[in-house]
Image (cartoon, rainbow, N blue to C red):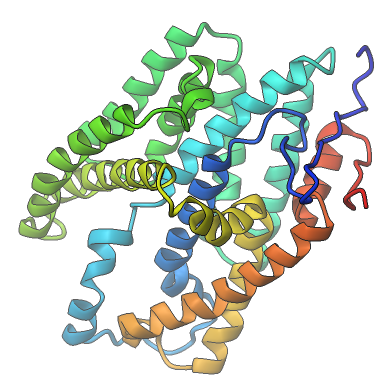
Length: 350
């Protein structure tokens, strides 16, 4: 194709479930499941920070409340954003590869995509929540991910290792790891690993054992190290990366079992509408926090879990029903329209 404004149309099976993505490549179901799973964990970690945006009461977290919520720091905090960041790099490279087969200037298409994401992130940040991650993703995508597309894949893989190891060695966690995780996802995609992600059992099993062997001592050292200690951030970040790896490997293995249909039903709809669900979750949490009242620091783990369920269950229901009739979520569709500079079809063919 010689013109840039015509995106490929996805195909669908007789059951109305697409066999290809909106960009025309074969859909990797595992990516949808992983993305939906990561979205659930990110919401769980972000409920209290989001609720604080509408909280006017002073912080009065008791010792009991802190101890009750300690499990969040062990199994949830900083454990899911690495998965989401990694998948962003994967999706970026998959789209570049697909766009390269349909347009003359695929990088211009991706530039538009990142600029639109930046606009969405800024609106989210200034209107709803200062902890927005979309703005960071867009900026890192523009400064790191997009330029890396001109580099050989071996260089991208080397940069990924450096950009992950360096923040860790400096005791940094969270956002400083995003560039390396982006490049890791991109490199593995360019090496063809993602195309084979659902065909292997031995690789995720072996990696899962390695990640677990590293995560157990890292988690123990995180527990033993006092917050504020010079090494706490290192163990916290390292444990987060390793546990994220364990989560990914376990899910990939479970997808090779009879549990696959259930996992797809639960997580794939959320993952396929991740942008819509991420942004709408902020509004839903703010409304729920206003109804509950009080300082979020005093909320028990049970309250956080119930609130997460109160957000995720309606999102799952809406996502499931929406995707039966439409090809993409509403914000995903608008994002694709802006990316390809052409209005794509939204409704499924009857």
